[in-house]
Structures are given as C-alpha cells and as structure tokens.
Amino acid sequence: MTEKSKLPPGPKAINDLLPRKFKLPGAVIQRAFEDSFLSGASLDADSATVFQHSVLCQTCLPFRDPGDEVRLWGRRNGRVHLEIQAGRAFDGGREEFIDVGLPFGPKPRLVLYHLNAEALRTQSPLIELEDSLTAFVKRTLGLDTKGRNIRTVKDQLTRLSAADFRIGTVIGEGQAMTVKGTVIEGFDLWVAQDARQRTLWPSTVRFSHGYFESLMKHAIPLNERAVASLSHNAMGLDIYTWLAQRLHRVERTKVVFIPWTALHDQFGQGYERLRDFRRTYHRTLKQVTTVYPEAKFDLDEQGMRLWHSRPPVAKIT
Image (cartoon, rainbow, N blue to C red; front, top):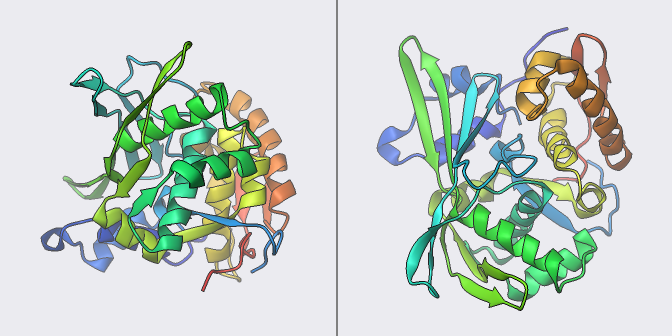
C-alpha cells in the first residue's frame, strides 16, 4: 500500500532552472526528488484556466502575515526544504531601496496563477498587468477593483515580485544541493497614493528566463471557478494545486501513502499540535473536493492514500 509512483516532470523542472554546467544527472534528480515534488475532465468546460508551475504546486508561501520583521520563511516537503527570502525594491518617490515583506495568504497565490496564465497566453515572460489584473481580481476574487481590496492585491504582488526562492535537498552522504530560483527578475514600481494609504505596486513584471522556460514545459492547468471558490483559503488553494498535479501521476495499479506527519510538514504551518492540524485539514479537504470531485483518496488515522484520478482540467494542447 505504500508504493512510489514514477518520477514526474516536477524534478526535471528544477533542473531546467540550473545553468548548463550545473545540470544534474537524471539518477541524482530522481533520488533527490522522487518522494517530494511529485507531480481529463474539466469542472466546467466554459470556465477559464489559470496555471501553476508543477514545482510550486506545494505549500510555498505563508498562510498568514509572519510580520514585517520576518525576512526568511521556510517549509519542508519530504527531503526537500524550501526557503523564501523577503526582498527589497527601489522606491522612486524616496529614491532609496526599501524592505518589502514576505508574500502571504491566498492573494499572492492567486496572482501567480494569473501571471502564469498571462505568460503562457502571450508566450512572453514580460507581463502587462494594468488591465488584466483588474479584470482577474473582479472576475475571480469577486472584489471591488477600487479601494482597500485592490490595494491589498497590489501589495501582495509587490511582495511576490521582490521575493527570492531557494530549494535545498540532501542528494547523498555529505552532499547537498541548493537551487536558487528567482521567479520574477524585474518589475517596475509605481506609487498609488490616496488620503488613507500609500501603496507600491508593479504594473509590469518580467519572469526570469529560467522560470519562464520551465513554466512552458511544466505548467499545471487549474480551473478558475475552482480557484475562485477557494480564493479566501490559502490552505485550500495549496491542497487543490497539490492534488491537481499529483493525482493523475499516480500509476493506475498503485496507491501512494502519505502519513499525517508528512502532511503536517507540507500543510501544517501554524499548527503545533497534530490533532489541531488534522481537524483543519479534514475540513479544508472537504471544501477542495466540492470543486475537484474527481479526486480519489482515502483519509484515516494513519494518513492519506492517493489513487489515480483525472486532473481537474484536461491537458491543454
């Protein structure tokens, strides 16, 4: 009952981000990532599609605000460790670099899905956001595109744009590998100011070459209606994207078992007691299955068992 599926595209996507001279042989990648970044029918054929990179279909951002003083944040998924470093940006009004906080909550996840979709739609790493982001916020989040709501989205976009990602894993006795990945390598920064709040936000972002090229090969389609239904639940979005890239890669004759401790490592940020996490995970998983009814799994006292399932969105060709 505890069998491993074959290696999916996720680990190869990590290799895509490395300079040529640092490319790792396939056997090394498989040993390092086969238990970690494991990578139909549509819920609504008329629904729009957004995307997430297969590697980032994991818990990759804080659920809640860790505070401006926190500049490093990390999670563990099996043998892989993810670290996000808050960045800095140049403020043209002050003419100086300023600290930008860590992205957190549902909104930067949703924004990244949208950025990925726009990059794939235009086949360009340079993404103009002014009109498309406003439409996305109104359509998918159901938010007023003026006032506090849009300022919050733009603030999270700035935080996401400035952040750096690092992935580390042990690949052998006494040997470890670090992949330093920048998702967004460039962005302009405008100041939107009203009587209540000064907000910095990008109207144009540019994906790094490595991320864009890898996204073109390893994008996971997500149903926008499903995403909209989970738009206020960061854990729900993480579970949905994880199942979207994981379940259809389970071999049809096998079952993959994931113990509660591993689920806690991946999704349990902020929950010190396992029983508290289990209660929330159960409740959140029920919400996810309402928008991904094709998902086949079993949850019991030992953990979660995954069966081969159709993806929530048919493969885009």
